[in-house]
Length: 124
Image 1 (tube, one colour):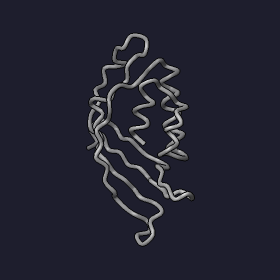
Image 2: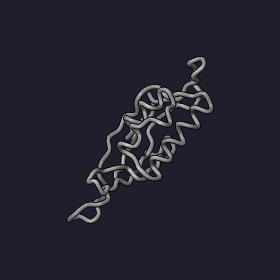
Image 3: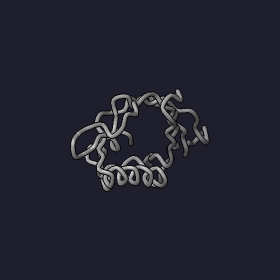
């Protein structure tokens, strides 16, 4: 999901069909809204986040339908820039931040992120 989001962020393409390949529900809505806001404000994102996700819990354990994934992502080299002049959009550095996501098994057997939370820089 984050790779698709990072790719769409290079042009703030809130309508990228790739977003729905790994996200659904509230997660997909939040990704699209964030990209639309960036597009509206003339911002693009450059770089890639550094991620090391790990499964925190599985429900139910004998036939998983829902997985909680936790991470301490690093956005140091994944920042927003003004599309018109390529300058950084603000003076806020990226950094390490806690990320939690709910991944649910879909009716077609695929797994998609249905919700996520990204906490402030410095939370991990």
